[in-house]
Length: 133
Image 1 (cartoon, helix red, strand yellow):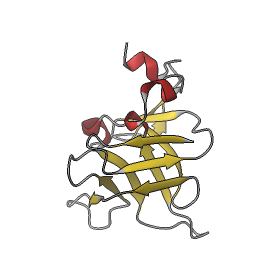
Image 2: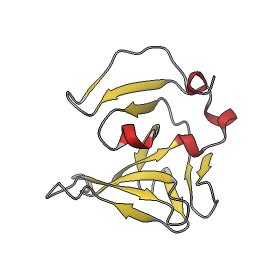
Image 3: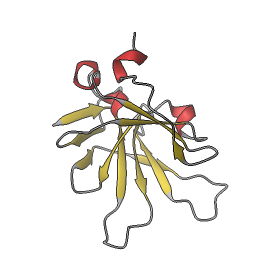
């Protein structure tokens, strides 16, 4: 199990199983937060615990997701989809930058263009450890 917590330690997440590759997105939110996302579904392999506050883009009439953060230290924990899928599952991602470095250093990074094309970029072969070198 992979775990991560905010800076003050009041809020945390857990992800069961292999997170696979993680995503670096350049959308207007993700590039500002500097998050790296690992995905699954709320109540399945992902669990968030402790107090959280949420942020939804105010300029969107019908936002598709919300950002969950610690109300004390403002650490960005996760994002959660606001519209369940047809099967009732709710997509979610946790910010793996909140995990211990040695637990996530080996994870490959996928680049996603969330700003313009909504396409995944070709792999650069970089892993999380490459960001901390």
